Image 1 (cartoon, rainbow, N blue to C red):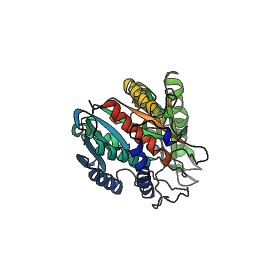
Image 2 (image 1 turned 60 degrees about the horizontal axis):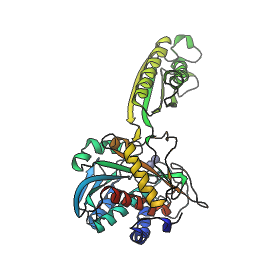
Image 3 (image 1 turned 45 degrees about the horizontal axis):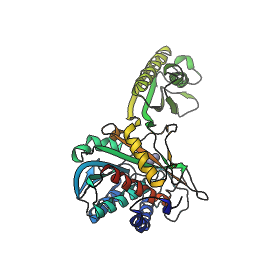
Image 4 (image 1 turned 90 degrees about the vertical axis):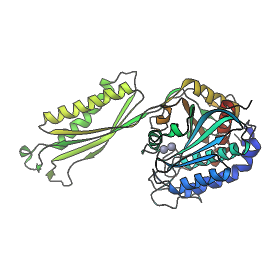
Length: 398
Ligand SMILES: [Zn+2]
Ligand SMILES: [Zn+2]
């Protein structure tokens, strides 16, 4: 896959800008900012949008979110293209020259690439204007757990930018560069979090009969929770529950008066989620009561599942195929059990979230969230070409 294999009428302009966009991407990579703290990133995005002559630049939505509205030469509907801007709270272990200069933070999910590619598309759209309608370029904060996309929706994203459809893109290690994954229906999991505190009676480890053993009760609960996906959810549905946290005493000889477990529930269907939550609550209360203890349950909805709309996914697949070739688009795949807060936008407007392949032979193709991950800059023309192809397709000039 080379850039010359891309079939786009914007080929020459994208090639002109590839160096600039790469420089923006590497600068963002060097200066990663985590959820709702993307102040430098948001300022760069807003400054560039203004410099490109974007008609409206809205800042401060969901603290650091930025929306640019680009009007075409002809009237028509508005569509929304979304990128995420945040980095992850982890230490970079790669040795690229543009390695993070901020200890404990890195762009390990390629949001530096997403932001830069959408900026590049915005620049070309603002230069050409040869489309009928408006394009909202949406730069959201806090995708990695903070739910910045949901906050933007609640703060009136679609009142200020009345998009008739919304479109997301994520770089996808594991797929070769030049390929896309346009999967209809469930694509990314819904995720809830829970913390359960078992309260009992602390005691000396040598005098267990004088206490209520909260660690033993919590251990039973950890085991019992695994019966939820196995025995309460239909074999035809998906639910994955991971109890990843377990905190008891700080001493070998002290039985604690409380033990705390925590974890996540992942699912694709709201009814499955409801079953899982109800069963976890009953198990916690029942097991705690059986041990003479008490359960305090904090169960929180986090991200809804990301469900791609069928018609828009067909459109996305056609745009990707027109750009990269008829065999370039994967239409069937198991969904990913990670979460994605573009789901909040897809719950409000029809749209699609597409995977863009980035793997190349001879390159470090580390998976996202790995400490030596680095966005593949060779994918920039593919991503920019996809965004522009989508505008050509959805808002054709008459
Ligand atoms: Zn991520
Ligand atoms: Zn990501």
